[in-house]
Length: 192
Figure 1 (cartoon, rainbow, N blue to C red):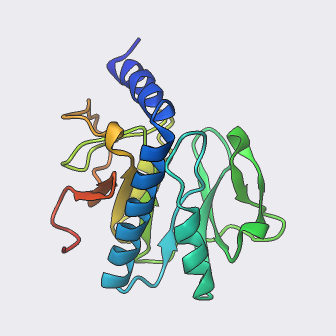
Figure 2 (spheres, one colour; figure 1 turned 30 degrees about the vertical axis):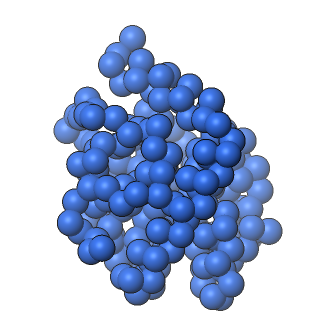
């Protein structure tokens, strides 16, 4: 078993056993801080994710974005290597997809390239304060984040997902920042 695999097991267990009151409190402050950063940066295009299992959910943030009448770019798993992105205008445009996660229905909303400068909110299993991220293990987001014209990528998680360091490989992409447990961590790319 690799170091990453073992670490994923530990961090998933920590996240899954997080006290519900702590999870709710950290979700609320994380969403509030993410919303503040989105407004401070005057974001035109926002990409996010639909939470799976015990991931921190951004439903409240999504609803606020949609209330502005703006599309939210959400991913759809196509195969073992590819995410496609779809400009979704409400949760009603989602249906169960890969891994049991709600995804954009491509029959209703065709895939399109993410617009240049899109700010991406990224899930993960673990994060460091330097912006390193441990994903699920298939490299979906590392491939997305390798695109040269996207805006900053911000990792989203609970405080129990923070670790001092992570095994980093050449294909791993560092995030511009991390919001964990409602605290801004990592790089100077987004001013406070």
